[in-house]
Image 1 (cartoon, helix red, strand yellow):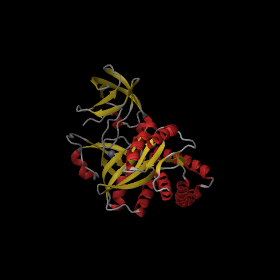
Image 2 (cartoon, helix red, strand yellow):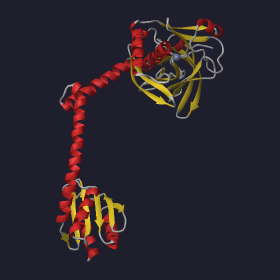
Image 3 (cartoon, protein in one colour):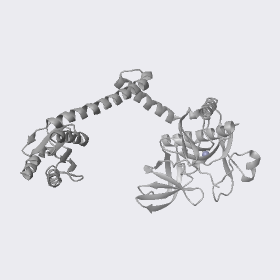
Image 4 (cartoon, protein in one colour):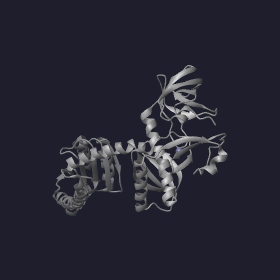
Amino acid sequence: MTFIACQRDAYRRKGSAKVVASDPAKDGYWIHVEDSLLYPEGGGQPADHGWIGEVPVLDVQKSSERGIVCCFTKQDVALGEVELTVDWPRRFDHMQQHSAQHLLTATAIKLFGWKTVGFHLGEAYTAIELDAPALPEAQLQTLLDEVNASIRAAIPIRHRVIRPEDMEAEGVRSRRLPEGHEGDVRLIEIEGLDLNTCGGTHVSSTSELQMISFIGTEKIRGRWRLLFLAGGRVQKQMQSQWQRERSLTKAMSCSPDEIVPNVEKAQDELRTLRRQQRLLSSELAGFQGRALQADGDVYASYYQHADIGILSTIADACLEVHPDAQLFLCGGGEESPAGEGVFFLLGDAGWVKQAGGLAASVMGGRGGGKPGRFQGKATDLSKYEEALAQIKAVSE
Ligand SMILES: [Zn+2]
């Protein structure tokens, strides 16, 4: 097994390497680089980004050839010596998340015997999948306190290489090796805490993790996932939470402690108001329906902010007073008919069918219903008068 430049020194951000081949690919090129400073995706850690000379590298993957990685670029690169530059903020973030995972995994086993069976380093958060029957709040708090105590203790993190046959004697935690692995094994050691096989790039002390914060747990396929942030991600998250809190306290004119009780109170009030509003609109619709006057043979009107439910209540109320009425009602958001809205027709089945089709075609809408009732949506309520005139002509 050949260990490449980024595995020998995770902190080197710039250095020379050799381009040994270039393969055209869909939308770009795979540039084969010997002894790369750019880390290829693997072991749960995403690929580095960076540059070959001035050419941006958008992905890095392992190659079947030892000591070679393939860098994806949009431009071709000449063979020979080149300078590689690591996208350091991205890489250091991955180092923090990956080392935090090793620390969490080791501490979860030590404290509660929870084994890590999966690791996902995503853009928004990192997750470990734990073989645990449950993740009780109190134990999670103990775990969090313990890992953050290890961070404050600035424990050295080192990498070293041993022969596979020495792993057992060394007490390596996970002795699983990638398929087809040959030769020496790379270990990551958190001094006195953990020794594990890993090809990833890591920080050199737990102090560089700054802080770990748990952001949630979820149960997927019968296993528990613990979602966390480490290092710069905690700081970033805190900044965005402060900003959000400032906007909320400003919008609600209250202190941060008052946000939750005030939101609960506002939701209660809103529920009550909605209930009252429903009762009042139904009562008002009853009055409007009973007061509706015929325009020729058609009882027609436009109602501001009326939905199909309200139009239907108005229509039913009108029928109480005028059992044989033919109705054409519209509702929309504006005071005068304009824009999008709804319409409703009620009356003799033959008339409703014909008048409903007319209303839909004149007001740019569509609809349907059962015999004697037609409801639809219109895109252009400014044509309401025109539709009414045509509908009245049908009735005559
Ligand atoms: Zn690892």
